Image (cartoon, rainbow, N blue to C red; front, side, top):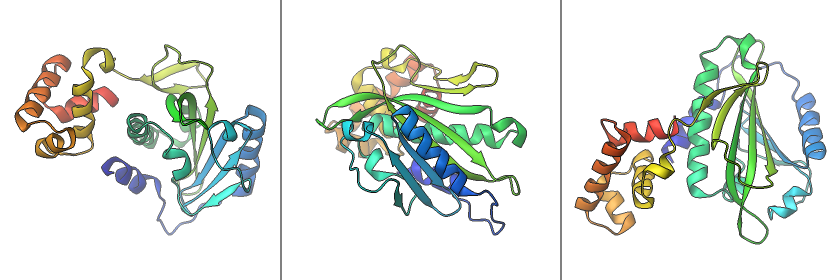
Length: 245
């Protein structure tokens, strides 16, 4: 996926100057989060391209394997978790993580610790049914080279779907929402228009979208024009960015 490739390129630290953070301290914190909050906690190491997944009893509710704790994988992408996320929400997750990275990357090091991501996503549970899950993400930067070193993600089963935005960047120090979804596009666009917009965001051409949705190119063009008119933007790519960014 194009968005995920962009995100990997930004997140992975391939610089020669290595981070001096003691990851063992953060592993202990990740385990504590999982135990205290009944969460699934993923600690991803951008320098080593590894992840450590800590599971509580909530993992069983989500139908996740509960073998070693933590489970160590050779990737910053926890595929077992990601494949359970609804495809639409998985794409949004990647987009918003890239958005979050860009926001913090433009800040001073001293300001970054105040910020985190809070979002709600749909994940399949042990009965193969989608459930609402609260997802939070924190970035930890290297003090010696300023590069992103660790990402800490928490997944908690939510009680119900709330009316809060699907995605927010918050400042915990000031207790403020810094960024949230600009458009309630689900109430503006039809289900078919949302499908077309999603494929536009993934980089598919009108011809490819027509094949994927089994409709004519003319129909795709009409949907794209409707999207532009409804969202009042100049092109479909901008519509996608404005809806998610």
